[in-house]
Length: 349
Image (cartoon, rainbow, N blue to C red):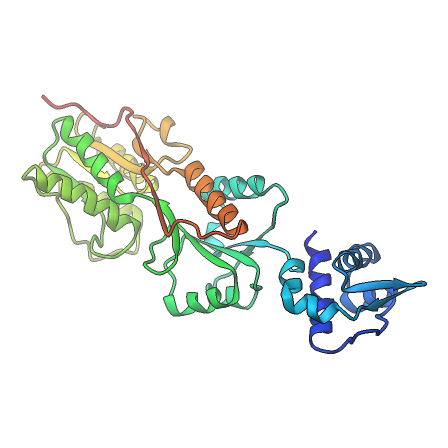
């Protein structure tokens, strides 16, 4: 119980700071309940922890600080009493993500009471995160590229930082191998006879998962002496219009396939094709990434790379349990996603 252990930690800090000294009687259960805004039952359970650690002792109806209390605390009592907590931190826009839900459920269920699990949302990460962590926390930061200096401040205040779905040369990371995914999707198109392939990506040189996917596809095609088609689109205010423009420009260059870099782009391309009476995949093949819940039911069913949410969640849980055992987790974990071959790619002669 996190509240119980946090309450016990507050008392330990009071003893360490000298607010309570050896032989002093602490407040009554009722007064402690009022002071720390916790239930009487939480107070009772927290005191039991300290009795077991021999920080406190019973005399009559009161609880007193033992003469060994400070020595026990200085030899690690605080570390033992401070609970392990997994803090999962992310920005607000992740709250409806099915990928996050899968990863979160893997971590929460896998912990099975070995540590508290809390979620923290903020639009001011990682600054706000640094204000909320404690020394025994394991922090999972989800889906962002964070400023390294701000991240170091978090790391200085907690037990371990693990970043999910973002790159870092400094911190532990768990993410899909987007470069390998890009190569796989380009290879799939190439094996089906496609050599004129467009990349529906406005800024392929920007860092991040889309760039890694692009580089993977580009590098594979270069090895086959082919160039991936790119287009510079000035007006980036309307995503649907962007996809419509990509389609028109690539078709004018005789492209036979387009790589979209997330599924929502692909379904926008589907709609643009419908409006212009472009047949998929007869006139244009489409591939994508992530495998959102709707992709198998698109017409034609969308070939896409599935985000390995279960494997990422399992790797995150493994890293957390490794830290709880007092060991260092693997520094960088990359998981190769699976390519789902459906009906949106035409085999050319």
